Image (cartoon, rainbow, N blue to C red; front, side, top):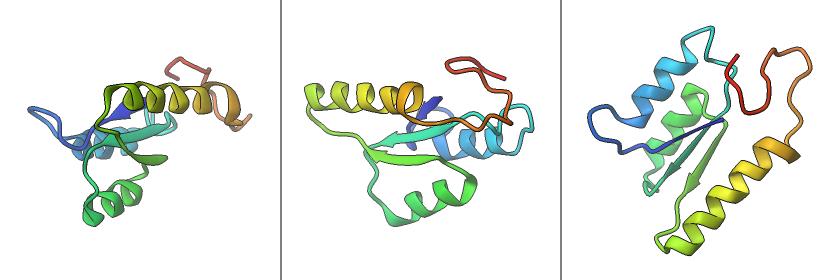
Length: 93
């Protein structure tokens, strides 16, 4: 799983998402957008490009760390991956 912020220095997370989802070797990796942007167009664009989730990060540090832990727990333990995809939990294909 990859966590991306929409607003990153040098290259924005939407561009990274677009690059990942257009690459056959990377497109099966789950991508969660973890960002402060609540802008509708950002949310729509991320889902259109193949983001698996869009989470608005809390401002409070304690709540932020809990959100990251919860996201990690979901993708590592709770989510059922497709048995047809060759993705090992926690590893790239």
